[in-house]
Image (cartoon, rainbow, N blue to C red; front, side, top):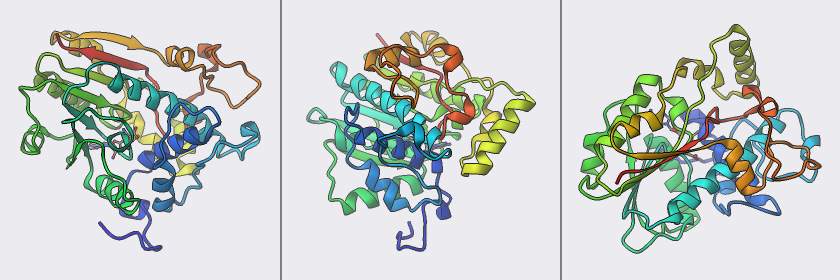
Length: 314
Ligand SMILES: C[S@@+](CC[C@H](N)C(=O)[O-])C[C@H]1O[C@@H](n2cnc3c(N)ncnc32)[C@H](O)[C@@H]1O
């Protein structure tokens, strides 16, 4: 990968701004007085990328008075904070499988942040540029993973079983799968294929946490809103329309013998005492009525608020 020497930004290299925007969300969350996540690497990753977009990395004293373009990103950081913590908790909740596979790992730093049991192996899959950028920045910070970390560059919209096996994945052992913020970037057929591979490659005792993709109504109004937001921010929201009609991960895994539970965004708001609002006078823990959920143009970076499925294969 090209050295980031002041002339080359992450985006110049065709890397996804969405991965960076999620890291910014974690940086903002980590800066709050009551953080759900302590990610000391997130801000460094955002700074190193020199994005053309002025991504916030700090929770302001008066979030509702932040500039209009920053507000959706701050709002999204509330969601990103809860999502990150929910998956952190999932990974630490039960005896974690010795191997974890993170699909679309982006700038997630769990391999470095979480206390992994001895002998744990984490395989992160994403595009080569994303993984190399992350390794480069974390290397500069002298960060050490708390597990055996394997970075596997692969395109998850194409077959990826062989590279995974070649990277040291053992299908005879239970696996913990993490699918966070990925599915909205795959079309429905590729989402099917990814979930099918998870089922096919899992030994009994495997677990999964999957963030569902939101079905996006294909209306002219929705298309116009997403296009406008994309033009303003450079985030490729309008591409998400191609991902309408996603499969239901729970239905797919249950058909393969898994036991699944659903977790809505409202569940996470209650669990973590957060409200998806920049109005700090709103009482925490009250949850958010459906008609007050931010619209697609409010979601900033990551059109993936379809709730979560956690699953276990007996
Ligand atoms: C919104 S980011 C989320 C990253 C990470 N899971 C997190 O929450 O920080 C989506 C990630 O999926 C990756 N991705 C999207 N499509 C992919 C594909 N076809 N193959 C591999 N990775 C992909 C992107 O490169 C990006 O890093």
